[in-house]
View 1 (cartoon, rainbow, N blue to C red):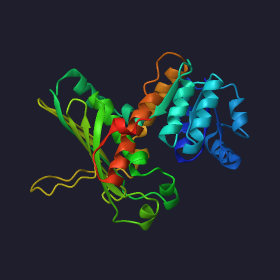
View 2 (view 1 turned 120 degrees about the vertical axis):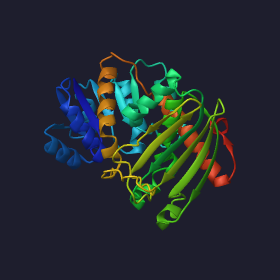
View 3 (view 1 turned 30 degrees about the vertical axis):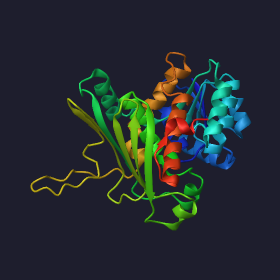
View 4 (view 1 turned 120 degrees about the horizontal axis):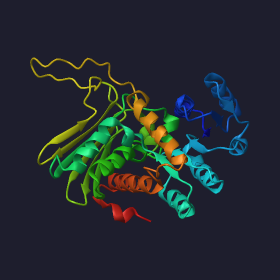
Length: 333
């Protein structure tokens, strides 16, 4: 297979390296709006570089991986679908709900597969939790507790264009709550706080947040988010049922410290960030995309799934701003 990759930043370069390692992939060609960056990435990885994005699309691709800036996602997805090229795109589909709906409207009815990158679905722990729920071994669920706690904030420029903590960060938790529970979120109540850098306030954002989600069967989910978890990158999910529980992310590198007498500390070191924590999941995700692109499997996470997680994030942002519960149906276009 000959695969293209648009966007040669940190995650794009990592994806190109992963794609190159697959036996099924005969060649990888990378492109970027910054031709120099694409050429540098290609030289480092030993792959081809397109002189520009149009040249990338003209390279007889069997599939395209999109890791470009968010505002480029809609155009690149639609261009790939129009050209009959199976496409994998990092979340989000677009920067907002109207943009996401516009993309979905244009690709509906097409037989060209589109896979959106929610890598936690491919993490062994989250997959095992989903299987435990589906099998019934946990009984009926009463509570899910999800955390995404970053060790340090991103740059101010990133925050200003991120869409906010719920849309940029919490959306992964919202997606896995749906994925693991098999239920839909119907109502949210969210709050946020700022105790760190001023640039969060300047961007209309928060550096720490919490949201209570009510699922359609009455199960409650609590999502905690922060940009300032000094102990390390802490991403976990607790799934609590009437007959048992499943905990994702409780491994030797979880940045947790027990102060109970006689309890030994976890060996560590803590994960420094998402790339290290979810490296195997990213590999599995792209491996699955090869199956999708080859027509051997359906897309496991389409644009409609990304839209549902985005609706929850949007409802949380409205709830935070207006200090009230918000039904998810109220933010649907």
